[in-house]
Length: 257
Image (cartoon, rainbow, N blue to C red; front, side, top):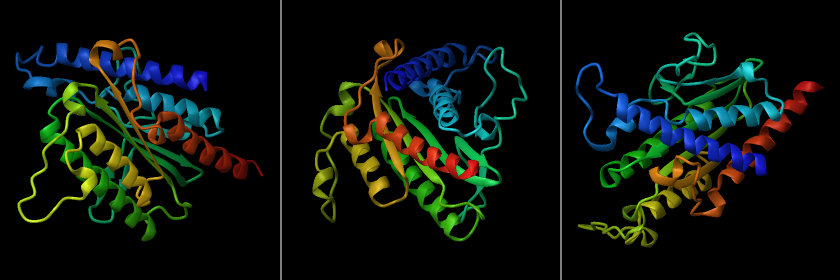
């Protein structure tokens, strides 16, 4: 597992370096920049390192790299502009026509795995609820589409949710929860934003919307060197990866028979 930890550290470092590059380069042509930390989010390639790490894990487990596709806003410097892995991550939905996911694995015409890579950098009060609504809605829409045969003849695909939260004091402070009419569930009472994300991951998996979820926290100061923390062991990247690897290994064995 040392190689897994090393790969995750490299992906975290890539994330923060991409954030820095996007913040520095955005607006260079027009002279305009997004307000606040939003410049680091709208560039679109900040989670590429995590997607690359997932591709390696799948390849090691016997899933051909040629059948792994992931989304990127634009190629990095030196990469081919028409890399066949990019731009083929759209799947049919049930409550909407389509959804563009972050990573897909398709094998022999069957949908094997789907992953979402998300981050929360700054603007905690504005975006935490949006992230939760997005995760729940995407998961429910995906499961409904599968039940209605959208991915036939696939067996139930593996669905994963990954979140990187910026490690700041504000992410761990108690947050007041308004209750104008009815009481919130007690576990949300004064829960920090990090705790809310832990509860989100727990319920996404417990309610069987996703097969696995991962939550890591990292700062821009030390994250650029690959440093990160995992606030809840149940949602560590190791558990997340092992779930995917186990499914990939079983899938690969059935294809070799």
